Length: 259
Image (cartoon, rainbow, N blue to C red; front, side):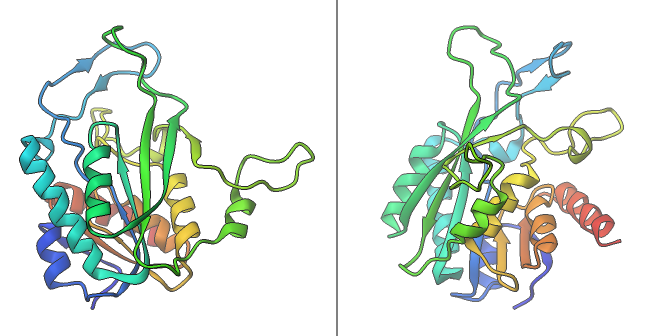
């Protein structure tokens, strides 16, 4: 089995054909949330610049199609995970139920639902609901002897005790949406990938549930954040991405880091 490679294509097919069974210690997945279709945008926003809601073909499915898709890709992940492996799945309230149900059906043990509180969340456009400022990361494990580096997490936890000593890392993470130099942008200033995740998020996940030399897999690699952070932390990685535009973007980003 090859590692430190990006496969271009459907993750279900590649997980079945290219990745060995029981071979991966950690999976991070940022699947489609199935939110596209309304083309919402907000130009001239004074607090965070122009804003465009995700509106991609890969993010448009009917409810039954989405449930079936979720079952297939999580099932394929289950097969390649080691018996003590972990999977972290990024989601919102829109698809949290599907993810939780299917994880339980496949006999995963759900350890935490981490709340990502966005410190720079977009303002409320409709003014008809509470302002959305959170996403979730579901952590589930296969088997009983999962890796959890409790002490290492305490050391990297930005929150401290009153006396300045280290503190347990809780399941609410205050992290900004990707911005500044970390955000990949095109010549027009728009984000190159609509759902780029913070490197700090992947750092915490990879340190928590893997060791140096382990293999980290991302079935929806997107802009390549998982691969970059895994490499920085001394892990092997496997990325799968269906969209060639994103594959090229990730390869370029990884190549620049390697230089």
